[in-house]
Amino acid sequence: MQAPAASSAMGSLLFLLGVLQLLAAARAAYKQWIPNTNFETASNWDKERVPCASDVIHFEKNKVLSVFVGSTHAVTEMFLPLNGELLLAPGAGFAAFDGSWDAGCGSGAVLRFADAEQRSWFDPALWQDVSPAGGQEPAGRIFSVDEERVPCQYDDVIFQPQTSFRVNLDSSQQVIHLRSISLMGQELSSAEAWAEYLGGPSAPRQFHGNGSLQVTGARCPHSSGCACGNTQDGHRICASLLGAAGCPALPCQSPLRPLGHCCGVCGAVVTLDFTPDFDLQKYQDRVVQAWLSLPKYKGVQMAISKVHSAQTFLGLLPRGSVPVIQIVLVDGGAGEQAGTAAQQLATDLVGDITQHGAALGISSSRMEVATGSTLGGHAGGRVARRIAAGTVLGLLSGLLVLGGVLFLYRKGKLRPCPLRLHRLRDQAEDVASPEPVSDKGFDNPMFDVNCPSATSTSCSS
Image (cartoon, rainbow, N blue to C red; front, side):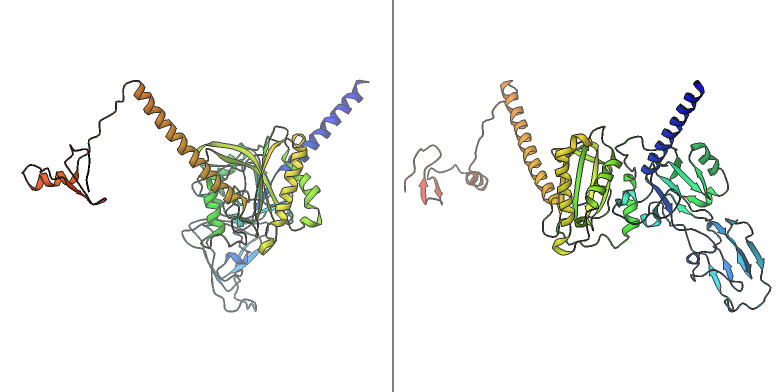
């Protein structure tokens, strides 16, 4: 009689574990590296085509390379690097060209393999969000601020199977943390498995730079989410993304600058203070289902994540940071309409929080707005706060100085000093002539009167 009960309990446990795994997968972010160093990728060659039999293949002598070869190629001549590897798929390889005519190749040319040294880990353009199976996520209503477009500390990183690559890991962090890395179709999700891979021959040819990757196997432990962890390399992300062009011009007069984003936006930023009961994924689903699905918000996109907001004393002196939930809302409006739909959605969210915030695990909210028809609450509010903070700080400083002076005076450590004023003209006459000063007095140009010497007490016109 106990066996069926035990079997039922085991089945329930397995079901619960399955549900937890699905929830973890739903919260996980998968980012896939886009470029590769494959032999058959046309963009990897200076002439934008794959070498044919009559071509001379040239790999730079001093470049470090890992090149995946997916098929068999006839070659006339090939120059290889001093430090490189060719990863051959089953059945792939190279054969000597027999000299037969190839109509699609012509007389041949010299083809040089492109330089992959500057492909940076922190370039958002080189990553794409994918599903756990590796398929590209469709563009939807949710986007990410720029710092979160490259792998975050709890993300899963995928390098496509049957590809080679080379990534520059230059970073302001000594260690770049990840949950897992998938290479050649194999997921490495433990520090031990990753260390074993690093000890192999391919890793030094695939990863270079002053940073290093560390696989932890850990997922974000908080239902409220975790900060991405790329703030230290924010300048690298923005430099890779913007280059020399800089940020584009926007129709709103005072664009908002969300935390973790390289440029300003027209729209709204809602900041949430939360309690331990807050669930980031559930709240995101609530916003998508209740508001973003409405026709009037068709063009609105949302980015929502946990960020660290810097705290200051009186708006001037830094005093650490606190975690908050940042919601960035943008729309496709132009001219005076830019940001207006996002502003309306932000207003709806703040109103909903006023009514249901306690049940959602939200203790307070703040909204900043920049549209094509307003100056923007962000810039104006910030300037006003700084002016007020400067005024208050100045008053406090003045009161502190006066209090110190009064304290020293009462203690007898500060005594008034007699102030002696000297007539500058008398001093000048003393220097010019040794004769004693006459009693004729001096001219008063202000009132055109003649005053007797300093010992006299009256003047006559």
